[in-house]
View (cartoon, rainbow, N blue to C red):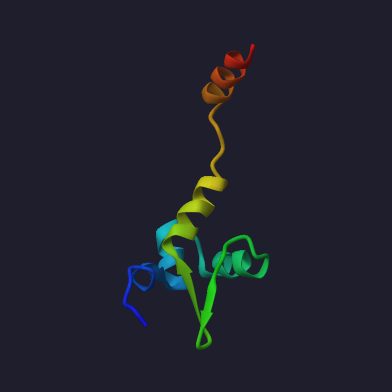
Length: 75
């Protein structure tokens, strides 16, 4: 098995909570509802940093200004 950067960017539920400024209950709710991908390794939960960044981006909401500008370009 090679030592690549994939194992270096796994974070724990506590680290995820800290990074997103959310409670542990919210982290477990995200897991239960499968809203964020996770790994279960030897009974421990881990999250890939790339997946966390994708989750953040997928949950981004446009500002009113961005929405207006985007709709004006279509016309």
